Amino acid sequence: MTPCVYMMASKPYGTLYTGFTSELVLRVSQHKEGLIPGFTRRYGVKTLVWYEEHGTIASAIQRETSIKRWPRQWKVIEHANPHWFDLFPGLI
Image (cartoon, rainbow, N blue to C red; front, side):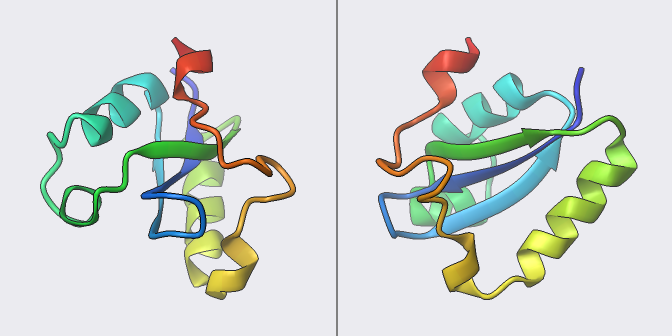
């Protein structure tokens, strides 16, 4: 169980969602299957496009909070994942 901050997208340059979890594979699976009511299910946000591991839950929460305050254009993840590939298959 490694604390992570992650970003999911509906499509390239589409709707973005930023979250944190200590069980990334489980959490992304839940988003992909639409098991979590709310934002990601409503807007079809199912593609894991970025994640970052942290040493503590506190640092992951702090990073998530910072990213959520960023302007939309700062959240475009082209430097880390220029083709907006789904990173989930590489996790499992």
